[in-house]
Length: 244
Image (tube, rainbow, N blue to C red; front, side):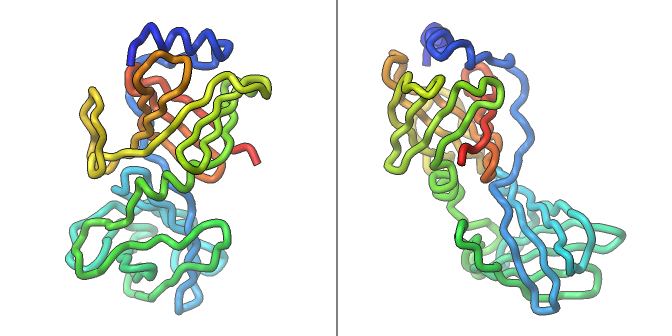
């Protein structure tokens, strides 16, 4: 990917692609919120970070804890295990298949996903496969990113990721370029000119008129409402909000 080519893209879409410099990538953010209901009546939502190294639990109206608590990935031989603490109590979360076991202090309960027509339940993989999280994060991103996203910094610019790997950029409602997109990871790589980080998710776009082989981005954040992409050549962050 050539810097000169990127400058041409900046001009084409009216200056939206104003890079923020080669600063560090943003902290890992979540991949959405997944609600659970427990056998003891407790409820909470689980939000995994984009690098899968932590999860955030947010208590519902009935809970074993209050507020939110962030748990870090821990070594395990029986499912995906995350540990942390809140209000002086140790919190242990173990996921296997679609169900989880939650321990807060001395209380342990089993929890299952609440039905959600807009999102399939999170699957933690086979408990016998050990501590690695077996969820295909690349597949989740491929499914979740589909839709139209409006620039936070320039409301006239929008990018749409379509099923089948088709991408369309618009400015003031008019198509300015289109092309293709695909997701890749270190575990499922493609050939690029930069080292891939473990557990990170990347998006490669090939857009008409750029005269570039590809535009590569690292996923910084993806929720139903927000999308952040880190441009790999310069480290600038492109921020979007979902367009319903």
